[in-house]
Length: 186
Picture 1: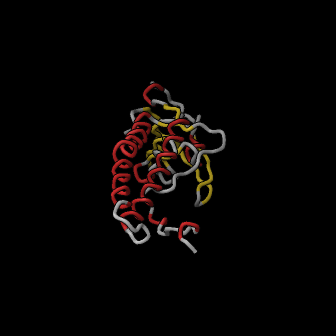
Picture 2 (picture 1 turned 30 degrees about the horizontal axis):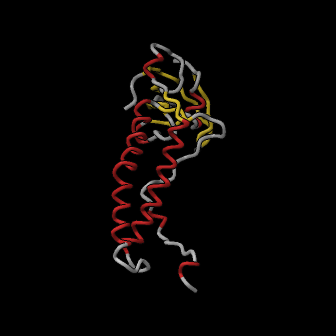
Picture 3 (picture 1 turned 90 degrees about the vertical axis):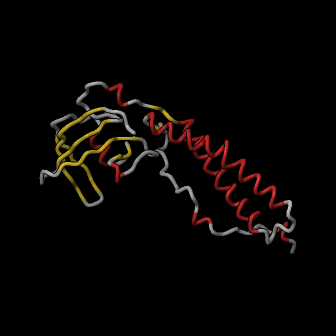
């Protein structure tokens, strides 16, 4: 059968450059800090203005070389183009739903909302500091937790001095809120 009528998988989609991002809860807004919004906007700009045109140019050059079925540049270029287009669609949707919230506008508030930098202490007195950010900005290693995470949901609307209880992956936990402050997220 002619290859034109058969859809074959290119395979190798497991090693995509762009990892799958968590989805937003149904009907929820995509809260972001100004820095997170700027990062997504810059990534979209880079893909649209530089990466995609460069890849299209490579695919066009490879297609002009003849037999496409065994042309590695063409096959890889088409795969890369699909990845870029998928990421562009994703970023466009995320940015359309974005609601940018500047933590600095909270002022001197001791109640916890989106953008707060919260220091908590467990029963052993070990302190950790977390910043509540958008789901596209979350980075546990940097202490940035998504506003939809169990810890952030337990912290929201609590105040400095309160004790919160929440269900963590390791079981129920209790934390004391030591400090709440609002500062720019980088």
